[in-house]
Length: 555
Image 1: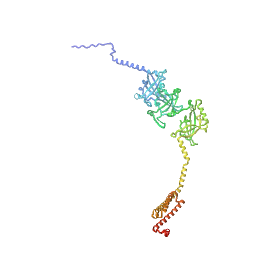
Image 2: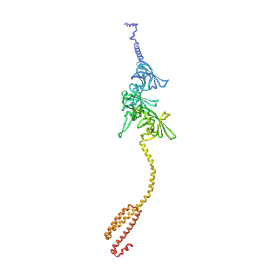
Image 3: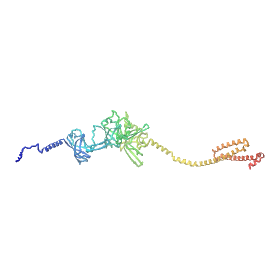
Image 4: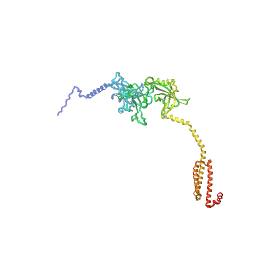
């Protein structure tokens, strides 16, 4: 059986649709389209100078505008002309209109500040460059990056504060009004012109009308202690203030005050300093004076207050303390500013009024108003004996104010005066004299003691005599003599008792005592003889008739 072989026919035409090249061709078209799309969206390459790269990575870190990624860092180079780095980045074409004179670029990195944690999203995505811009006229591709976040002034109100003392605040420190946060500190810098600290304060747009030219700023106190109506009030600041600190302000709302935008506000140390009553009617009129003090100047600070009649009218600006070898002590030379607006009236100038006051004599003296604090103030007082000569100091080109050394007042002055008076009394000498007098009085006291001893002996002897008389009176023989003799002896007993009382007030060494002692002895003898007589009569009742009793008595 024969097998038919297939017949293969050749085809001369090429079928492109079924060709193996169909897939690569489609891929090429798609790739081309993607390339076109990529380059069609690419904008220009920009160049940004930063002091540090802060973790930027080429090919990874992005540029964000309005929280949208609009570019990517292509490379990072070291700036060979000056310190820092140069970051090159390619941005999208739709951002090109915003590359102009309004463009601001800064690096966003994680930060922990007073207002909380910033750049938290960079913990996962890494640091990136943020951009702020508005449409402008001039196209720019080279920029100098900012070191901190850019804030548009038009959104909030910004005010300048100057501080002459160190302030423990930072960027983001809260600003309070009546205990509520209404703003924060924007920037802190050192003013090289007046050597003060310059603070830029941002007040939120919502509270912008709370600040005007009358506003006073002060450092928020952590602890507030007041003595009010015989009771002590102790207030502790809220926890956020304890942790973050802050600055507070208060305002007088009056249409006559300006907005304060062009004013540099003064920062006060405390609320008490900020609310210190200002007198006078005119605008500040500050003139400098030189004050020189000798002796105890350790309590004088470079910002000491200048006070007149209890009101602060100025403060020191400079202080120099040096040793004087001739006086063997220290001396201070101060430059202070006095605001003569405090002396102004509606009809006359403040400085003119002060000149009239100085004609009658005025002097500046150091005074410690609080003995618990080693801080003195400069007090201006009238003194007819002191002449104001209006002589200028060559070093400061300011008038020299007549001065007096430190004067202590209040409790310390009272205690010092008491100590001086006690010292003037010479108590040591007085005590020595008292001791000498006591030594001299010792001998008379000893003699008086002996007199009292003798008197006691005399009293004891009198007691024995009285007891003997009592025996005689109580005997039967004595009763036989008769009622008259008995009455006589009873009266005599009373006399002896009175004599006993009298003897307690007399000394045995006196003349009266000696005579009384002799009388008592005679009385004792008489008593014994009487006792013998009674004894004889008891034995011989007829002895009074025959007379033999006299012999027995005297024998």
